[in-house]
Image (tube, rainbow, N blue to C red):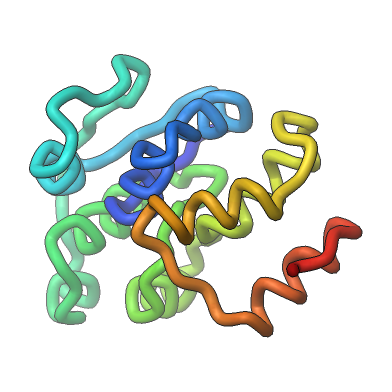
Length: 155
């Protein structure tokens, strides 16, 4: 399985030392060059297993959407490579990707997948770490629903 990632979910995982969850779920982790540049602003080194592939073309419907360069290239690359999912959290980017028929997963969805694959025992501590040290914020209602979906309880 292939995942193409935007910057913010990958940054959050790197900040809390949970980037290996991606390798546990997906055979290939791919990012476009803009995401690589954005990541390198905060991280001097990136995991060697992350592949960098530039999109061949960015459709006008994607370039005109007003997204940042990482989101734009990630969506364009996903349109070309047809990954299992596009890892993206920003609302506008997610909406555009879905309008283009792309499967999307957010950071919380990834954490749920990690529990389902038994890569982590519980999602609550991981989500707490992402909020405390990964520059993430999630609404309480969403957290309650996500935790309930895997038989856990948000504190």
